[in-house]
Image 1 (cartoon, chains in turn red, blue):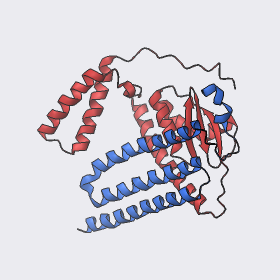
Image 2 (cartoon, chains in turn purple, yellow):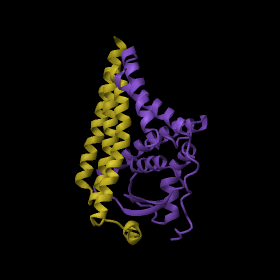
Image 3 (cartoon, one colour):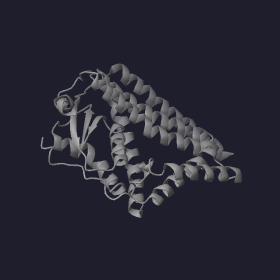
Image 4 (cartoon, helix red, strand yellow):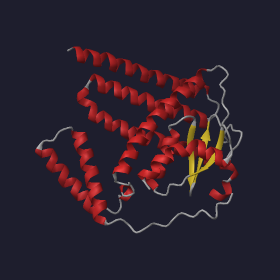
Length: 179
Length: 112
């Protein structure tokens, strides 16, 4: 494999700390309000104070939120991603149901290697998770740009074909979200 | 009154659908030949099965829906993650998969 010529692009200029803190604060406050399910002054004040403190202290360390492309295009892609993901999840379950209910258990497992173009760690996490929850595929290992995927009914063990078959659908959306 | 009766029935049906997928996942665990295939059967069925159960609960008690939505979100992140970690641990521990090709074993020396 010609792995040597594929190097990870180095981290670009880090996003400003203030933006990281704002994102962290908003996310934390949103979760807090959803968990409480109320907008009473006491809940709001507690949430703002605690989320503010955490955002001030940990903005740099919890920067996993920073990669998201917070633009209309990125948010639109996120919604399309969720829709596509749910569709694939249902398909995966129906395929699995058919498989386990067939007396002969027609499986042809293989572990294949695929490549991703995504560089953002959260983008990759979402890709690996999405792959695991969709028809017959399970991410086993991630190394550099490559994902090793266990495939219950492997159509083709070739690197390029498998990449196209497994990764391309999700990557299309994730590239816009974490581009 | 009519609406809540309708939501109750719909919720019960969705709950039933969820348990059906969970049962199929259980069957998959029994039937699949090796650890990796079992993880596959387990992960997908438990994720959709649990999502449907939570959705059914949200239809029956709409007041819980925001919290249930949060649980669904956490579930969708953590469920596949734990499966991936289990699969990786199994492979690193040397459990050979029933497979026509094992790219991970082929590249083992690069990954060490």
